Amino acid sequence: MTTTLGIIEGFYGPLWAWEERRQLVRILAPHGYGFYLYAPKADAFLRRRWREPHPAAEAAELASFARFCRDQGVRFSVGLSPYQVFNRFDQDAREALRTKLALLERIGLDELAILFDDMPAQTPDLATVQADILRWVRDHCAVPTLSVCPSYYSDDPVLDRVFGPRPSDYLVSLGRRLAPDIQVFWTGEEVCAREISPGHLKRVADELGRKPVLWDNYPVNDGDRMSRHLHLRAFTGRPASNAAHLAGHGINPALQPVLSTIPAITLAESYRRGPDYQYGRAFLQAAREVLGVELAHQLQSDLLVLQDGGLSRISDEKRQSLLRTYDGFDHPAASEILRWLMGEYLVTDEMVATQ
Image 1 (tube, rainbow, N blue to C red):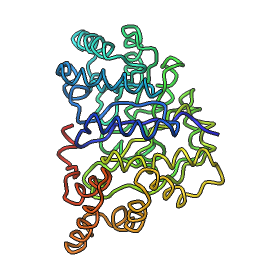
Image 2: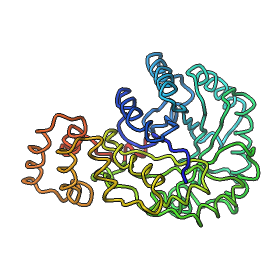
Image 3: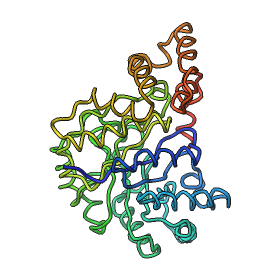
């Protein structure tokens, strides 16, 4: 049993290069990854500065990447986060949104996602207002498929602590008011869920009145704490039986695009093999495919240091040793490890607060 797999580029931190995105799609499309949602938090023209158009060169790159994805058999979508628009959806906001939607349509989208995640909300009837915005978008946009990320996209109480208490029956109210063909993203019982079960997904589907699209926050490693670790190990805690309760399963990748493809391949393998899936074997098989045999075995031997220990627990002597080791490999994944060891992928609290 399987479901549609996809990439959700939705992390905080530095932007990828366009060729890095293309390479990731080339690797994962043959493994059944069928959609790509472009929504990096660092693209200000989709979030804090959403009322402004992308510069011409960036808009051209987006359109080129959309064509590339379709050539690879991958549906391309953009995630627009009209920052806090639900707090004041007045005529000025509507006109700005109308203009933005027209610009995005020119890029050539298969799907459009409206993302309300990670924004403070002061609107009493939040679900009603957000559903009204989606209805307005549907009336003013020709993109055939719409999806939404709710303000409260997980059961995790951290969302209530950071963005304010969620309204009573928020998820049920939103589901009732949304058109039935609008897809809804959900991350699980936690923002970064350690395990996602069929029982949990069934409950969420019952509340929403539709199967959710899983926004899986692994192997993402943004933020001050997580960016100090490389998330490399194979997927666990996502049984293949989840597929019966999902409209899709997208993964939010790590800051390192090539290394992200290793756990991504294991997720496809876990759906394919079901109860016969073995995460250790799946990791090594995926690592060999992406890295070649020698680098794969080196990475396997360093998992405890790179993923579990992290930068804060690597001594200067060990760091120098790792730099020498991975400098000996001519591979983009080795380059990502070198950049990580030198602190180039660190994501600060300030970056998260301002992106």
